[in-house]
Image 1 (spheres, rainbow, N blue to C red):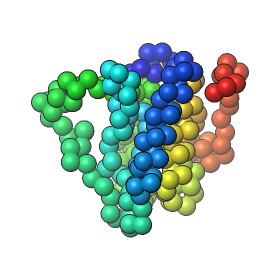
Image 2 (cartoon, helix red, strand yellow):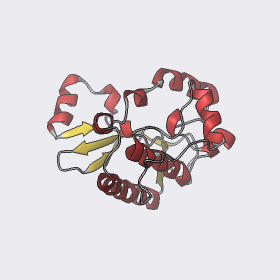
Image 3 (spheres, one colour):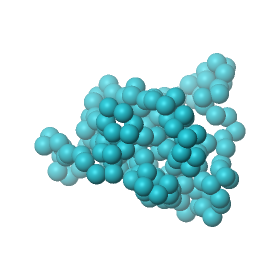
Length: 185
């Protein structure tokens, strides 16, 4: 993906993509929708550098119970080869930071069944979700902050050797601003 090839994006691209993501989240949140699984894997990039957010399988409609979620018509994980080709023909490529984003999806799925109300991806999960199993607009905003950090540095802000170590690091807000990071970022 784009970030893994470049490690860190130029500041102008970070700002441009961040502004687009803020616009998308503003639209969703004003519409009463919380994505709840914002991560680079769920962001597509067009040939003209426009971002599209995908995978609303864990999203929540504001005011609804945790059991009512928005389900996509075509889950990208379930696309057959013909549908994947059509998606790719539409000039969109996945905007992935590192293959580790595909990270322990199997482990995440098993853990989500265990926790019941846990949604999200370990590297981007908000502390409130970990502490109180709460999600809301803040869940998406936390993930956005993690993605912006990742675009600017080429690294995720919180990463342990296991999901549970990652959760501990998130709860402690234990991350460092690299000295090389532009002060205007």
